[in-house]
Length: 282
Image (cartoon, rainbow, N blue to C red; front, side, top):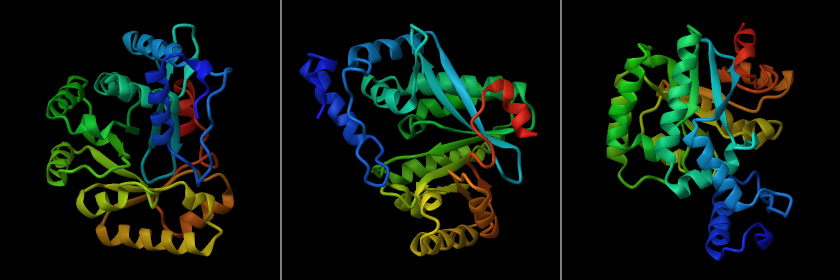
């Protein structure tokens, strides 16, 4: 249920209910319901429009333990009053307003600028699958990277989707066009309730990243057994494995013993700003 003090517009309230329904739920925990202390729906939309129009994005980075120098990029938006808008708040609105393509192009542009400034580091980041599947975006993506004279292999795109795309052959064919340029793809949240298993069967990717529950519940025998099976599957399929939300030395050692290729979490590095990135990557 949505507090009606956020808006008097029925359609906006209904849209907000759908956004809550589609939001990620963590192990059955309830999603926080907005209150009068939260930003209004209309104000949120206005700030998101402002951030996109002014390309006012704030990028953050989390270095990852791997056999290469790699960091994941996350993004926040800056509203017109200087307020910070987090991804979980703005992504549903961007989708609803039809700004996905514009948002992803601005985000990609900013990632490429960082690539130019810092050599020999790969960057992993999300792009909407809907945008990636757009034929025009394939060409736009290529043009943007070539314009900056960057190595495509430094770009690692993270794919996350709840529903299975209907035309899987077309999807895979498009992904292979990117991969032919040496772009790498990560299938995210493998082992959770989403489309990842079906995609693992039918899409050719380079890396799979396990759902965060495998780190959170790694003391439980069932989670460890399933994780071992996934790691073995990666070895058989000749793709790399990645685990996130690792926050203790015990977990780090455990996942190293499992020979998981990419280990991400606060025990490796906290999320940092650009000015701290090179120091964190050292």
